[in-house]
Amino acid sequence: MQRLSSGLSWRRAVAALAGLALSAIPALTAAQEKFTQWGWPQPYEQVSQKSIDWLKEKGWWPIQVAFQAPWSGQNTVNIVMDRLDLLEKRGVEAKWTAFPSGPAINEVLVSGRYQVGNGGNFPFTSLLDRRIPVKAIAILSPNLLHALVVPNDSPLKSIDDLKGVNPPPTVGLVTGSSGEFYFQMAMQLNGIAPGKDVILKNMPPGEQIAMPRGIAGVVAWDPTPELIVSERKTGRIIDSIFPYNMYEGQFYLRSELIENAPDVAQAFADAFAESTLWTRLNPEKTADLMAEDPNLQHFSKEILLQQIRAYSNLYKPTFIYPHAEFWGKVNEPIFDWLHAQNRITRPLNAEDFSQAVDERFMKATFAKLGWKVPARPPFLPEGWSGQPDKPPYPEYMHALNSKQPQPFPEKDDLAKPWSFDGKTYEP
Image (cartoon, rainbow, N blue to C red):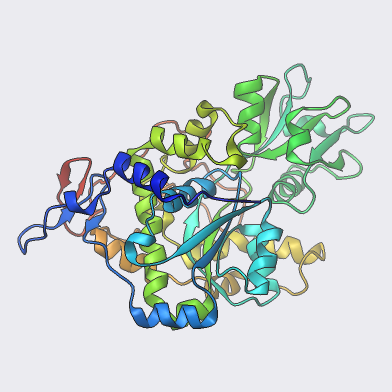
């Protein structure tokens, strides 16, 4: 794992590059609210000394934040928050550490050594199963591409072609991952029998990228499919996760921190939203910041930019809102499958997920920005007829069928005037 750089001179250079110097921000007047170029209202709210004292007494100062790298969308928001000192500007001292996997993050959260974490739906489910007291306050990289990728010369054209092949083809995937759940669900809904029609082989992402001989295909999540298809040009996608599961990640805090220092939890929600806006305005600069992280140095800038556009900038920025009821229903089929496979120790349902979400902080963040809380995530089209707990799903917006970012703001997105990139938008 790699701790992000915190050199003072380097941070000052980044701050100057981003135009973050508070001295350059005009004073507020009663008649006009001031925004940064990327749309955050000024001045920054400061956390209370009472909360700082409590955190110091607990030994939670600076606050330790665990994130997974590389993971498209998650590493973006965490790196931007860290490198631009978005917590420090609110009076919070925080340190970010990258971990290789969700289970590794779970362990440091369980131990109490880290107080803030990021996780996909599988690791987050494990925390719920173990009754670890955490609350999700924001959504990360919804609809991350997971795909069945086959070599370019493969005779397979769709997932249906896996049926009846003799001998049964071998597919590589990470056992116990969200990729496995996607493929298990896809096989079930397409009448494909694991062990009979397909042999599943545990295979880490690094090995998947090489597309080894003897493997009919791999089930991978971004950026691995993008690397294989667009950069190496050694494979093609014949099936994807989108009809079967709406994947999402959570940004979460230990419940004790929320209960005793709610203004600090609010600072995290605000910084999370601000990092999303900064990335929306500055995708190239964001890619530069990511490229400097040791965990991402083997990815080209072109891949980093593509991932930023797909998982940070494709949807309206309101995608970060943690709709507890919606995402609880989306995750219920995952809970059922995990319990049936003895991957979790007790049955869980949508309500269990909802209870582990705290919408208050992002709701307050949206109020500061003047954004309305959308009734549902922005990637669902008007009149979408699907049910989040009943796949397969009708078509919705995702990285494979959409390349242009959703316009924002549109009619009914705002509750009050908001400025972004030098333009003021009216509700």
